[in-house]
Length: 288
Image 1 (cartoon, rainbow, N blue to C red):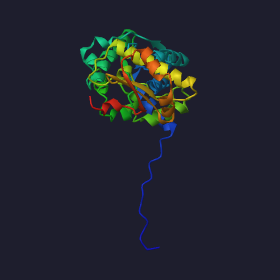
Image 2: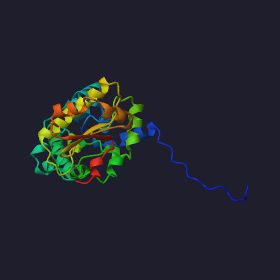
Image 3: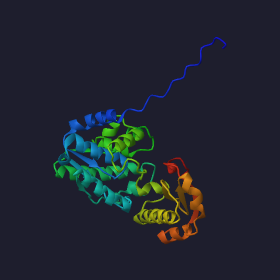
Image 4: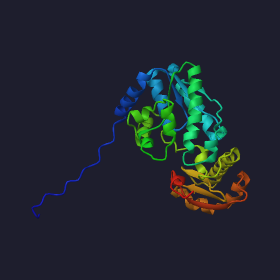
């Protein structure tokens, strides 16, 4: 012992208990009254739908999934089943983000144009069904992310963000979703298909569809090879297509004999094929 006191270290604050998270979220939702939720089918918006059903009653909640070329085809059926399981009415209007020149141009503000269009459509449909207030699944982590121009579009339209208002982070969302036994609690993030296209490359229906086909085909290849994968992206980089997978699946992915053929069948027939480890939001930090 040298007589000097041990250096003081600050232990991280304990994670909030799910009961506390639930109380905060329900308190953020209850004052709104009847609520329409822009429901992508992902973990965040699913929790908002479930919380609204608890706070307001299922009959006072409307789940609205905007269906367009940017929504992966496999997302719609689980979204329908989730809403039905809660007894919440689910509407699936067709939206046309591709009509927006700003969206098609695919600048770093692409999400602003996408959300401005799709959320306006959701709000209009909600009002027609007697729901004056709308909400999204934006959480507290999203609000701190500098690459979220869609949040500005939602704010301009007066859309609520109960998760953000209640201070729930992504980990809080998963913790509370698991506590409530929601099937989405561990669902991987599934951003819109346009997020796979490098900034500056025009977003078209053809490009979105082939990304969707390619990801479906690669997942099937991995499954048939007995390789589990959680996060997978097929990135359209112009003359190159990059397939990203989480680290445990990456080595097996690179060895798949049918990978290039599957991508060519999906529509990437003149592209150089590369593989790499998955990193969320990667195109936000790469040159474009």
